[in-house]
Length: 219
Image 1 (cartoon, rainbow, N blue to C red):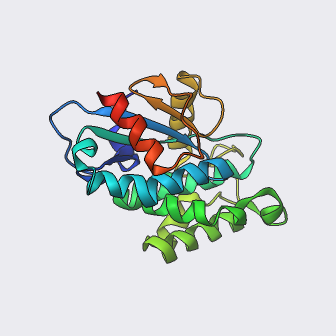
Image 2 (tube, rainbow, N blue to C red):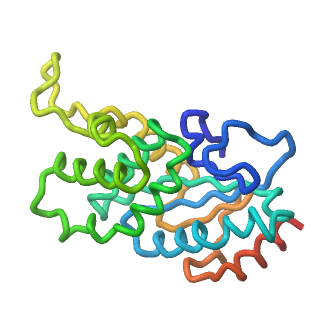
């Protein structure tokens, strides 16, 4: 599935890095990973990718890495109410600093317990956005005020009297949700390799299992 240029921060090409502005002219195999920021299994698979697999594909396994691109796909799950808020934060970070999207995602997954149901049941939506903006500022250096302005919900009705006014990234959120629905993804994490769901991939895989699978898949 295609990736609109405005979502380029979601792409990680091992030979280029996160949010690369240039794209290799050669064809690449595509690994799409559908993740929910408040899903423990998504955090587990992302940690393996971010801390061990992707670095190894840039160094000792660069021959394999040169054949691949990874795309982070937002998988908002309604049974996790805060999933919407956290993914809005990811989209806002991507808009302000595309190359910091993967780093922010790592920070958010590491702190995901702070955004589980019990952790935020007694705070307002904008209060949660403020915490997310502070997290982005402290962990990846994104301007806290600018990020919060993209996320905050107005406290007054719109000029036309509307009350469901959303925020500055609502339309982006609708787009990424539509993209997941169009390919029928239901749960996270889900991995799609070159357009086909890779049901054998597990969140418990080690980096060695990932490397074995990828080498077999690109052969």
